[in-house]
Image (cartoon, rainbow, N blue to C red; front, top):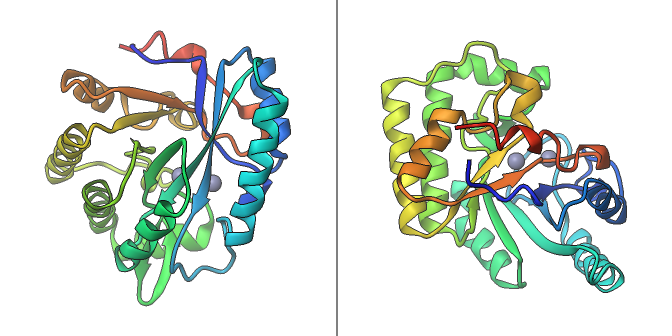
Length: 254
Ligand SMILES: [Zn+2]
Ligand SMILES: [Zn+2]
């Protein structure tokens, strides 16, 4: 697979409230793995009603940028450090998200869709928490996947972005989620939009421990490659020891 495994393009830190480790600990972990570049891709969400924030506040982002600049200077010549953002889509807050993204310079903007609204509340489609899984299963798996993919397409076509994150990770903690023909058509549309907008597709290695292959699944990665879409490796590390996880397995994928 044509993919740069010397760059981990997707890591989090304690700043998002559901990961652990300081930014510097992630940089040290990347150095330990022999990486050439690490890109922080911290969580941005807007207008989400959830029992806890799993994203950064304005103040968190201010600290994030200041600390990132300090680390870039400190580690100059040893490793490249990128400051990016994983922008979670919310169809009701598109303008707010775009405005936020426009206020700073980002080394990478990843687009994701984490929170689906059901009955005035939001449920996280990539979470393993029981209350998310129960509410989403009750709403109907097929419908949830449908709404998720429609949202990703909207995000790709309406927000600035460099890479689409963990494309098929929706309901990753529910067993036996099957994508229908219709879902595959939606994914084709998303890939078409990704290509037209010169974005990359993330190959997210957090899938390996869960299902033995990355997000998205290998056939979808192959479809992207056929269309000339570049790939970007990301561990989605939420603890320093996961930086660059399973990158050795990417080279073996076809
Ligand atoms: Zn996270
Ligand atoms: Zn994500």
